[in-house]
Length: 119
Image (tube, rainbow, N blue to C red):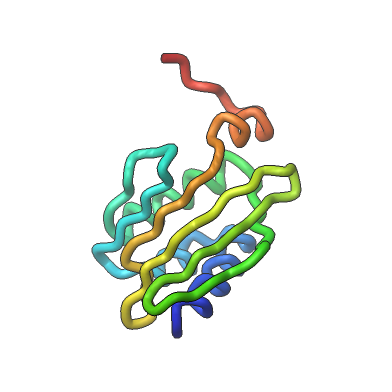
């Protein structure tokens, strides 16, 4: 699969809340860095991250657009609550090796009624 197809498969697995299907899209040594969080390294740690996140909040990714350039794809998204963000996926041999996501963590926490960390 090329980067665009991988991102569309990622969105489908994310919207299904399927941490196993998501993990299968990552290389064993992949890095997922949601810039509001510390980077998560390795397929199994990424699977655990998604399991934890799906247990904490109901999330939906509505695709605005997916752009592909060589081994990279960019995803612009929104959710039904109004949060917007984007993600960048580096795909090699059909697997995500690096993912970076940009979104407003404070808005997400407020929208889902989750605790806001104090400094």
